[in-house]
Image (cartoon, rainbow, N blue to C red):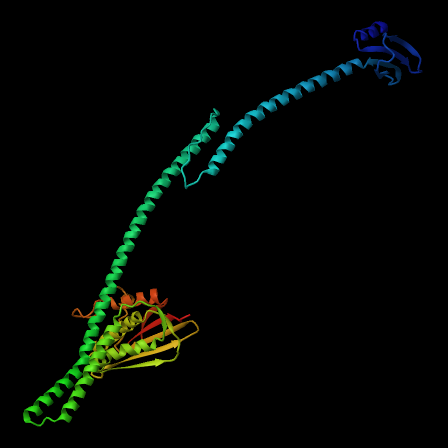
Length: 410
């Protein structure tokens, strides 16, 4: 019975030896399968325990051939090689596939990188049939096409804007030239009125001298000394009138040469031209100079600004109809970088409701067409654009105070 059971072990070709040894190491049974002595074996021993007494009855020793393990190792190794080659093949195919896709994407990236708003570019073309790549390529081409369309529209809009800006600038320059011309004509009219005031007394003196000569000649009392005396009076007054004409011509000289000058001198020249008119209106004036700094610009433009402000002060004082007349005070002061010219009057000031609009073009408070509304506007433009300064107005207890802030001559 035992031998039959053990023989069944040898139905397994990998079993080489079977031995049964009792508890005293005596061989009860053994069976050997012929094999080479050099053949490697694996020996397993299994103790046989009595289930009732739990004592060792015998030990079963079985020797297995190592060929099975070697064959298994070989089979596993071959399968591993096969799997490795298969994985390498799959990796190669996958790498080639994705490399092809990424190559197209790289070309698309370079094409996008070389795209410039300054120039048009040909659409990106690719023979790749991958759906995702085709979608990206189509989207990129549409995006660039849309950008090109917008660029063309922007160029057209920019050209139209440039044309409109040029037209607006041209119109603005024409308006500014017109304002300048109107301002000069308005100032010229006021200067002519001032000259008329200054000529009134000399003409009266000349008329009296001529009448005196005529009367004495009629009475036969005309002597050479009398002729010389009245001739001198006439010549002196004619010289004064001639100088007034020269001052008027110099004031409106179109010379635009920029130079450094002391602002006190042109201020005195303006008062000299307006002096007779101011005295006729019972208006006194004073110039207080607290610094000797110079400014840089066109002298006649500066004179025009001073003339506009003084005429504005004169009109304000005259509008009060005060029998005591009025007063105009001009003060020159400096700091480290600027020269300030304060021109104050006793004309009652600027109403608060219009003080913000007093420098607007064509805005005037003068009645009966006596004002054009461009004098103060042009004065502000000249100070800001030609003298790098500012012109402002405020009210004092007696009247208006105009302040010119000018950059010192470098």
